[in-house]
Amino acid sequence: MDKQSAPLFERLVHHSQGKHVSLHVPGHKSGQGLDEEARAYYESIMRLDVTEITGLDDLHHPEEAIREAQQLAAECFGAEETFFLVNGSTVGNLAMILSVCRRGDLLLVQRDAHKSVIHGLMLAGARAVFLNPEIDPATGLTLGIRQEDVRLALQKYPEARGLLITRPSYYGTAIPLEGIVQLLHEYDKPLLVDEAHGAHFGFHPALPKSALSCGADVVVQSTHKLLTAMTMGAMLHVQGDRVDRKEVKRYLTMLQSSSPSYPLMASLDLSRRQMHVQGMELLEQGIRIVDQVMELMKDNERFVLLQPEHDNEIVRDPFKLIVKDATGSLSGFELKDALEERGCFVELADPQAVLLVLSLASTQEDAHRLAQSFKEIAESSPPVNQQGNARLTATYSAMSGLSEPVSFDESVYRQKGTAQVPLEDAIGLRSAEMMVPYPPGIPVLCPGEIISSEVVRYLKQLVQMGARIHGLIDGEEPMLSVLIS
Image (spheres, rainbow, N blue to C red):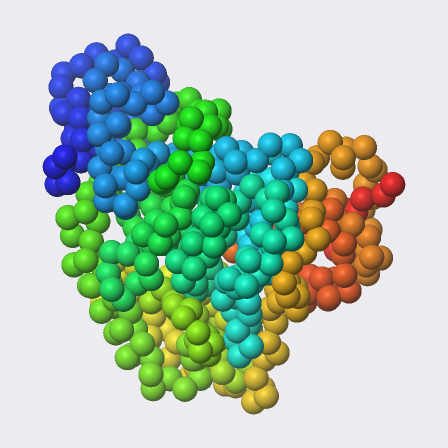
């Protein structure tokens, strides 16, 4: 196949250039129904916003342009088969879990997983044994799970259906996978990877290897996060025969919209073509911008980059920069506000730092404006605390090894009552909801987990610092929902 083609995009453009009468949905009729203000922004994209008419294929039964686009994506990213996702990596994680687990099945899961993984377990009615990630002692960053813990889990729970990991972490750390893959395959278990933030991996030597190249069985990638697809554009890649592809297809048909966005799917096609043809070159340009940011900031002694000081094979995505106030005067949330006042909007803030996400689309102007903003903040906000801010990490950082099996069978929870209690009164009880600081969307508590004093302390500190926590009931006194027998 011709990697320089974008079959779906080209078919849509060809159709849009014809003099057609639209007697089908959508109702805007290729943009004809837009008002004047909307037309200035949406007219060109609306010409491509069509439906499953003759010649434009069907995502749920691809035979033509979409099928060709997906085949090219598989070739580009190193899969045997690739599926376009129009509901983000979330729907890929759901389908990946449902295709492997039935009610009561047990899945090994890296603890710092996105909330969509927990939702997948809930939909499947499965059980999970959580493997807690290793924590860098200097920075508090999660480094990924240890191969020894995977071996222990497989020995202790031979009935496990497989292992699901998150790689890279939201902050860009990535563990080597070859040993874990080999171990799992010795037990004939699949490795499922939420690689939402790693669609660009493997296209440049400065980046970590992709999970597919390491032998993972199913990999979900958000093509929109670090590449150039539209938001919600993602892909699910499969190789090998340890996961039933018919089940994957069946669940994707059930979970994805029956009216998928053609502009969104075409953006996946275009993003794939871009990487297939220019990937190395574009990423090289992006990495030069990252280097420029670091060069411009090297004389700013107040705002420093956080880097894991672990001495193993952990690698980091260079496009993710974690910056903190070395004096501890500004929390991550306060630094985020100060940057936004200067027109620089960050990916997320946590108690100690902000996360900056650059990409192959970042520019020299972006680099200079960012460095100038940090300089202005340093000059306009004198340091007041020379002791440095307290290191604060997720509650599972104090744990090690494996959790006990946790059931996500919602029918069990429906038989129990729930109550809303203040944070302090929840210690020792079981959570009825997920508690999810957002972003990054990693649950601090999962349904059914016991609420410890450490969890309560962590949640209270996040609330005091202004974090958004999905599942926490806002009010004069924050409350959370607990299970009662």
